[in-house]
Length: 448
Ligand code: ADP
Image (cartoon, rainbow, N blue to C red):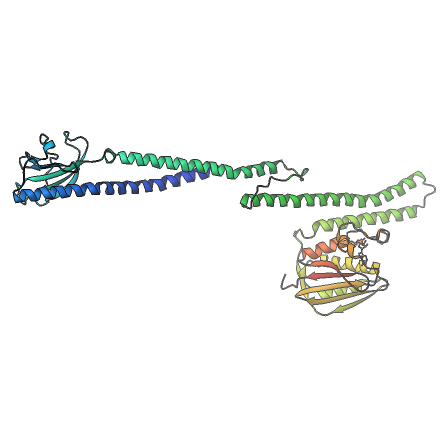
């Protein structure tokens, strides 16, 4: 059985009800004891004084009947061992003994509440004193009625009622306060449940202030902002990718249609060569897109410790363009990463450098500020300051004709940066005297 109520409001109210009931009950019991003690202490003192005065008079032989009326209205009686009233206050002259109980011989004085004598209405607080130590001594009674509130459990009933009212009030207040506190949460929930992937422009209501609920709403809205931007980026990317794929497909189709319509005028070898070129291009775009989708997703790619300078040397040595590549290695740092991806990163940077260089490219590996740094600098026309972030976006080409003709997909730098980020590093374009300088920073193997 499930005992936890599903509603926070019900749960909190139940907790408040139980705690307040326990706390107020404890307070009620304490109050009951205190009120009774304080209330009867004064009466006991009055009884004691009067009883002692009269028992002294009995012993001195100065006892007279009737006993002068007590200013506090006490019932005062001197009762013999035969249970006859020998002396009493005038107004009680005709009444029987206020109590049937006689203190035992060794006891002398007793205080108690007597409720069993019908001639005295209600209960009486009694002090009984044996006047002398003789077994047949008279007993002096000093008694006064107990206040009604102390009898028949009235005080306890009143305190119980107060405890119940206070607990109910506490529970009701809790119910109201929790309800009001949770109202904005419900509004946020309702709005969130209506927001779908197709309509990410809506935001949850933002309550005023800085409390936890306001922070929850702000965080939810920030998450929605990020989600909206990310969905917009994905849409843009899909549309860019489709556009990029459409160009070679259109060229391929036009070529093939032309060949099928005019088979006699067609140079079949040229058509096949062109079709292969377009297919190559399609293949490289699709390969790049797949790579982009995979980078940084973790998966089953194996990380290894790699001699980074050696990796750069190998990549540079593989190049066979007419451009001179100079390499300077200041350190032999190791990095931890996916070899294939790092090779791809170097490949993209060196490809671009060779493509845009006039005559030479400089590659340098060093360890600076606890980071492994690779710079690739060419002596080409460089990249204008305002485009230095844009070139890392997917399908950005500053020099469309040159890039396309060289087989560029416009994804090279986006892939390179994603690989750098997935390895805990960064890739940026830095200021250089001549051409463009790309700086890659990676954490060394022991720090990553
Ligand atoms: P692409 O496949 O077109 O080379 P990249 O993402 O590698 O795509 O590069 C994006 C754009 O950045 C290129 O089209 C080019 O305009 C510019 N670019 C990249 N590297 C260099 C460089 N070394 N010098 C000048 N421009 C460059």
